[in-house]
Image 1 (cartoon, rainbow, N blue to C red):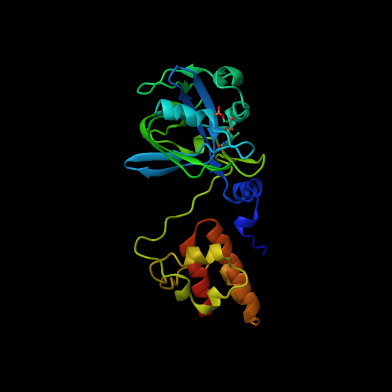
Image 2 (cartoon, rainbow, N blue to C red):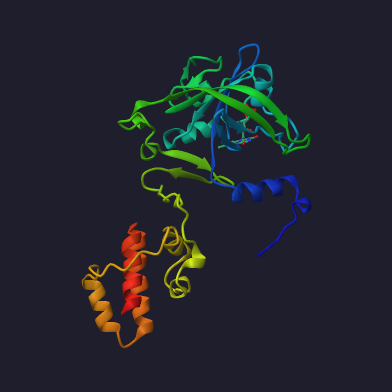
Amino acid sequence: MVSIKLSDLSAAQKQNYLQHAIAPRPICFASTIDKDGHVNLSPYSFFNLFSSNPPIVVFSPARRVRDNSTKHTLQNVMEVAEVVINIVDYDMVQQMSLTSCEYDKFTNEFEKAGFTAQKATLVTPPMVKESKIKLECKVNQVIPLGMEGGAGNLVIAEVLMIHVDESVLDEDNKIDQTKLDLVARLGANWYTRANAQTIFEVEKPNLNLGIGFDQLPIAIRNSTILSGNDLAKLANVSEIPAIDNTFIDERMKHIIQYYSINPDDMEKELHQYAKEMLQHGNVNTAWQILLTGNDN
Ligand SMILES: Cc1cc2nc3c(=O)[nH]c(=O)nc-3n(C[C@H](O)[C@H](O)[C@H](O)COP(=O)(O)O)c2cc1C
């Protein structure tokens, strides 16, 4: 393990380590306007949701490391305290990237990157029509985090209205995560996609409290086959299940008969079988395999 004191790094090195490690980051594609009506559109991946009631998001246009100048987006929200945050999906990622060119203050990035400006309902900056989700926000506060190159400026914005394209809704009018193809920023030029092929579910921790690793039987906890992820699924039950004598399927019968002369190999086979069940989300079956096997 290499350990580095941040104070020993240059601003560019700090940025490099942190942007690779704190990733993937969602992208706030911010549309703002200055007091004379000049529109700006720029992406910010120092961005997240911090409160749902009140609905607060924060993004951070930083001072440039190169020359300590500030971004037009920051200047705009200081003049007109409003922003539309357009959510970025894979279909628009290259156009979004194009808007991050350092065009002068009077250049409209909607036009440069081929996006369509759409009138917002409650705020002055236009929305990106091509974006499937848009958040109309008022800026409550801007907090500078420093005065040197690389220093962020927290733009604390309250979401007033959300627009969602019907194509990403389910039958209950809720956003269907599998229908979006969101992109997020990592270090250097890397991005990632979150779509039906790449996302996965993790069951919420047991509300009745999971038994925890410390209550797992030693043979299970010390397994050379079951991983930390596997053990966590087993440890999420509120009590160790009772043995169900009706369980025992063909594979179990085979393992018990074939490996009875070699308990170590039998344990490995059972743990492998349980692992496969856990991978398919069958926690109860996995427990039965482990308990029944232990009983034989
Ligand atoms: C995906 C992506 C994410 C970015 N995130 C940030 C960020 O969080 N903070 C920042 O200061 N610049 C960020 N940038 C760079 C700005 O978008 C870029 O400096 C832009 O030219 C600023 O435009 P403006 O001066 O017109 O506001 C990002 C660029 C890209 C492509």
